[in-house]
Amino acid sequence: MFWRIYPLAIILGLAAGSGLAILVSLLGLLVFSAGDADAYYAEHTGYQIIILASSTFSSFAAGWVTARFALGEELLNACATGILLLAFGFAGYLKPPVEPVPGWLNVLSFSLVLPLSVIGSLLYRGRSSAA
Image (cartoon, rainbow, N blue to C red; front, side):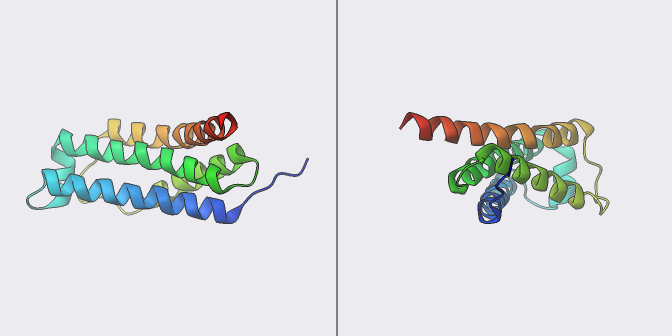
């Protein structure tokens, strides 16, 4: 069995997911922060929930966009996108944060990435097969 990985679909999914994550995070900073973003990030649960929402929506969008542009094997390509999102997320934690990040935020953020990218792919497949 030959699996078809579509690099362009994965790149587009990563770009959509990353762009959405940056947009939601910046909007959260505008709403909640008046000063030092790192200190605010560690102290305020409202902003932490915005970051969690950013991770959630971006993972879902990345899987949906990947499935949209994959010409078959949508689920496999969405899994590859989710795995790359996880790798980029872990790479972001190689540099120690200025302020400690709550454990619940790390656990939820990382545990939802792969399932939500797969759900985004499945919802695209369901929408495209119903049409």
